[in-house]
Length: 355
Image (cartoon, rainbow, N blue to C red; front, side, top):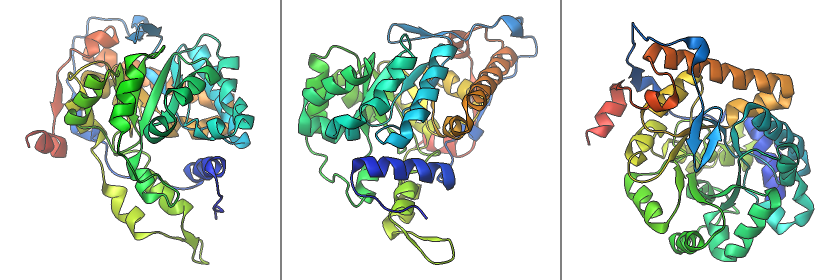
C-alpha cells in the first residue's frame, strides 16, 4: 500500500510509485480507429528515411518527445537523469514534471537541474501549473526556467486532478489572464499542456489568442490522474485492494480522447504535441498524420527507466523503428510527408467527429 504523505514533495513520490506499481491507464485514446493508407509502391528506402522534425525553431532527430513526468523528490532525481541523458543521446526533446515542489523548497532543485547537467544541448521544457502561475506570477515562471535553463515553459492544466485531490486547488479563476500576461513578454516560448483530459478546439483558440506558441493536448486514454489520486487517497481493505473515493472512480471516464482532441486542435493555430495513450511508433505515425508536430510519451518510458539506461534506450529505439516502418509503408520519406497522408477514420472517433 502507498502511504499517503503530506506536502508537494511527498505527493510526487506517491505519484511515481503508483504509476510504477499499479494499473493507472484508463480509456481508449482512439488510435485503434485510425488506419493509415497502405502504399503498395512506396518508392522510398526504409534505411534512408529522415525522421527529423522542426518544433519552435529547433530540429529534433525524431518527433518522439519525452513528456514531463517526475521530479520534486530526492527519489526522482535518478529517473530524470536517465531520461535527460537519453534525450541528449537521441537528439529528442524532453519536458520535466511539475516544478512546484522545488519552487516551494529550493533544496529539491537538483532533482530538476540534473536534466540540464547531463543534457547541455537538449531541448528542455520547464513546467508549472496554471494555478501556481496565477498565484505567484512571472517570478515563478522565471525561476522554473532558470532551474533547468529551459528552452520553453509548459503551463499545465490539471483541473480534473485538482478536483479529485484532497489538497487540490479548486479555484480556476484568473488562469487565462495569467497565461496571457506571461505570453506578452516572456523570454522563452510558452506552451500549454493538459494532463489527461484533452483540449477542445474552443479552449485551443483561447490559448492561441493568449499568445501561447504550442499546445500539448494531453488527451484521455492513457495515464488517468483520477485513478492515480483515487489510489493515493484510498485505504487498504486488508485484502490488498484499494477502496476508491467515489468521485475518482466516476471521473476516470472524463475527458476528450487524445485522437479527438488532436483533430480538433490541429490547424487552429500553432504546433501541437499529441500526448495521451501513445503506445507504439505506429500510434506516433497516426498522430503525425492527424496533425501532431511531436508525440509526447511518458508512462511507457518511466518503467524502462527504472530498469536502467539500456532498457530505456531499447524502448526509445523500438518506438523509432516502428515509426520508420509506418512511414515506409505510407510512402513517406519524412514526417512532413507523413503529415500529408490521408488516414481512414472509423468507429467511435468517426461518430464523435460528426457531432
